[in-house]
Amino acid sequence: MAATLKAASAVTVLLGAALALSGAAVLHGMAPSRPVDTGAIPPALSSTAPSVGGGVLPVRLGIPALHIDAAIHPVGVDADGALRVPAHPDQLGWWSGGARPGSAAGRVVIVGHVDTAAQGPGAFFRLAHVEVGDKVRVQLADGQSRTYRIVARRHYRKDRLPAQVFAQTGPPCLVLITCTGPFDRATRHYRDNLVVYALPT
Image 1 (tube, rainbow, N blue to C red):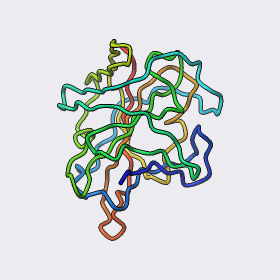
Image 2: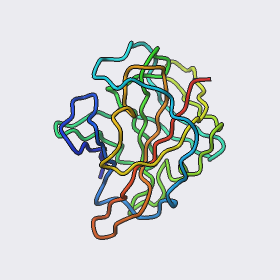
Image 3: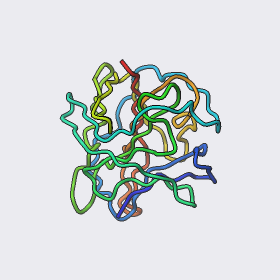
């Protein structure tokens, strides 16, 4: 079953003010403890205006320092404002309503499971351990790749995830999202989202 990135209020294809990564039937409660916030978040102007465009579809993401290497598949937003995450926990989802790597503006948003009940750790299980300065390599559909450098790590309550995480104006930026924080075994939800920001090198 796919987890979803859900808005607490109605959203357009371009986000709402509060989004939450959930997946009541699949999360396992294994995620690392809440990470410490670090680094400076790149500026962005939150807007419903489209990004400048351009760029190439991402197909794979690697973070060598964390031994993360996972395929990326496009994901869309449901009518209820849910951004899907791939059903397989070892895969990542690129928000197809956002920027692509190489775009002149906007956030390239990639989401993934931290873990699942049936299959254990997900593609982003180690993401909480990323450090400022770590490199992210994104392979593209045209055979080329782009490299990013981690500049910030933040955790947010799911009902307080800022809209600027998904902004499609401002400098290009890669945003990685998964679950973190306390796990409620009654609801089978993590309370928080982990958001990692990276800039092109």
